[in-house]
Image 1 (spheres, one colour):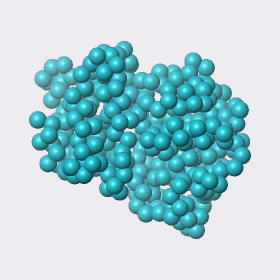
Image 2: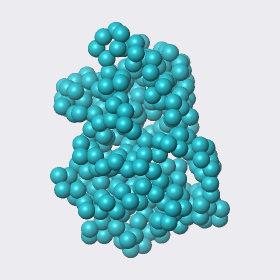
Image 3: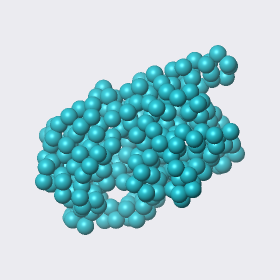
Length: 334
């Protein structure tokens, strides 16, 4: 069985290091030549909440040869049409692309390779690339979990092989209501990744400040409400029913929700959104695939999403150089 991680940035490098460390065989692909060279010369160095170094097999995309049974897709969604079309020629007839991307990427990928050749996976941990070859794990070691599933009524039989690979890093749950799992991760990303990028801070800092926490709470509530309006049942994350914990209809429950937000995110307090990392590098972000996915679904069912609309607007202005990530941007939410 040939397996690959395509788009081995911070998350992919750490996943590949864990799989290799625990006896798996997997090829890592990344177009960042400096990162690839550092991995070849010194191995993958994992820092942060865990520390180890692991030799890995790593290549640039132009060096991809033959076909793979399992390809973990971990690039940004901005080039999905081009990237997935390229990967289709390197996917075995019974192979599967496993997307670990944010948002709701499975339908678009399915249009290119077929619904039964796509699996989705949500990741409950985060990482930051510190320098070429060095990636910081920013989530607690007991939060290294995955949720795996499919939007197809007949998931690929490869799902058991994928589960076994991911379990070389952490616990894996196979979800039958995978769209609900996607939304459980999406509401966290929309709220915390969105505000991390808007404010230029970590998840923990966004939760600690009372002003930004109000916006985080409103973003979470908006995601919960749009799912309820659209008939989507949000699944628990790591055994915690986020929707039940953070939803509210009374003033008392709203106060409780506000109080527990920093507690709910404490294992990921050090995480800095990949969107913020992109902004710091002068790159375009995935905001249209994260907060924008919430807005798109709201428009589809006729449900307003003003808070997520505002996050999309602010981040695009930061991309265009009109604004910078700052707590001053809280004023823009009114």
